[in-house]
Image 1 (cartoon, rainbow, N blue to C red):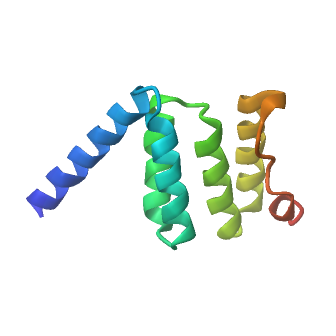
Image 2: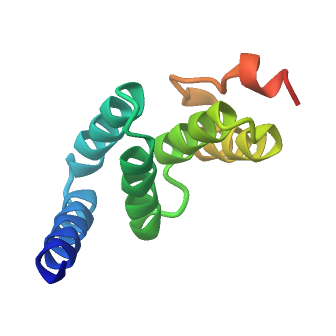
Length: 105
């Protein structure tokens, strides 16, 4: 188990370095989306938390966490995350929040 924990820390460390690079966060967001779409929700969620640890108002990470909360039926939480995401992006947002989910509120 010690090896597994060490590998996990290394993976998180690499993610943090990627977030700090110019294009790293878009690669991580892509990775999170792929995990989410393939049912690896915990992995997607962890990537988003890693990103938010470095950049607390990262709109795409907040948006994906909103999608995860919505899928879990946590509609109030999802709505709040979507609002944060939109506030972070402003009017130039290429994504809008998931109205189907927030409509369930």
